[in-house]
Amino acid sequence: MAERYRTQCYSEKAIKIIIDSTRRARMTVRPHVAAIQATNKELADAAYAEPYDMDRMVLAMRARAQAQAESMTHYPDNSIAILEQLPKPDQVIFARSNSGATPIVPPKSCR
Image (cartoon, rainbow, N blue to C red; front, side, top):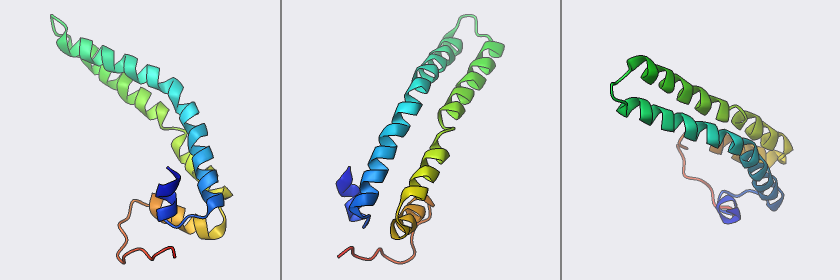
């Protein structure tokens, strides 16, 4: 994982911050995985139930969407926490890589 960040020209300090923060963030998302799996199962059960019940299907769809949304609530907080810890030059790299924009000019070499 660290090599990927090195190719993006992050400093070693930034790489450690990003990797540590990502590991911590994964621990906060894991409890939501079970909820998402349960709602996926309910959605499948509703879709294949005999007789088909549209109300059950709608409830299952909404429950799954809610579980997915709840699992993502920590994502921006984690990115902001990483950004605030990074040295200034690494903040620019991080911000640009998280913008979703495709750079117009090719990236500069790190070396």
